[in-house]
Length: 400
Ligand code: PMP
Image (tube, rainbow, N blue to C red; front, side, top):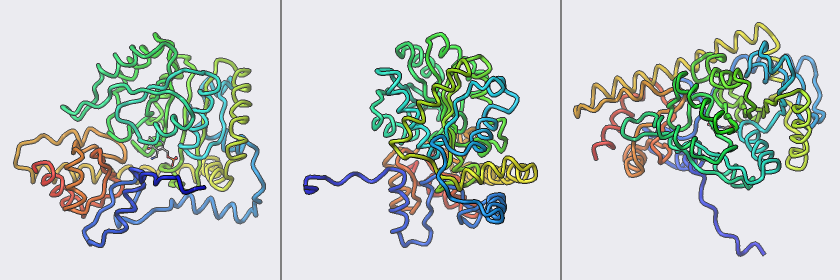
């Protein structure tokens, strides 16, 4: 009976790691998946995570089921980290927060909420965007289309295109926005541009739908990376925000995140939360406890919290260093006069090189540099020692 099932294509991002593993060349470099590596290119468990886990062991905490909405202490701190503890939406209890299965699962819950309570409403997303956004909405049965975002001529933001496409979307659409460190381009709107985006969204009665996967990890500051979301909240808008602790706390496989729905009253927030729970129950029943406790312990303990911020700054700083070094190497080696400064303007763990599919293939086939075919490289997988090699590979691929 399963004979008729055809082979599914490999995932465009996770498939890159598979191909990397099979390569025996010693110069090989995995810049596909967005996971932080040390300067020695090893995975990194944060010290604060180990400390929180030790505390949890000492306390002998049990493994009983969490409620459907997740760990209460986690839900409180996650909303406070995102909006700021003093924010009126927190004070007035206008946020429905439910712990989800990391960023992906939280986005999936939001999509299920949209499908059920806004039938026919469309989500519009940037072109390009993180590839899984489309899968998530497709599987939830939510229609979507794209707005212009990336301008290949400048390797920058097509702001006018973005604004006119958001304006042209049917009134009451959901506008999917990357809160910081846009994936895959690394190109974020300026604060002034965010204000204009919010203006258009309000004019059209659209609903902002933020994906915040890199808070604190992009700039090194939790507050700075949440400023886009907070500026929309300050306008009194209702909105959705999915959060992830994969990158900023390195909890990738623990699957820790949340969906937050900012409502216009505490009453509405309670009702929305009850419906989110109803959607979660048949999908996965309840979320994991281990990582949720880690987050609650780190944020709830002043010493661990400040240590976390220092570790985040360290990770963000290492990425900024290799970004600078890559730019320096490209500028020094490339004799064509090409301006590589767009690399320095990007933020977060990725750099969008502007390499097309054939050129990205050359990166992998000739140089053993594994990356996604859209020209995105994860700088988190790059060491200072490998910057010159990567620059050689990029220049060769560009000019061939
Ligand atoms: N959104 C974006 C934009 C991402 O880059 C990622 C991670 N690659 C996620 C969401 C979700 O990741 P996770 O499910 O591990 O939290």
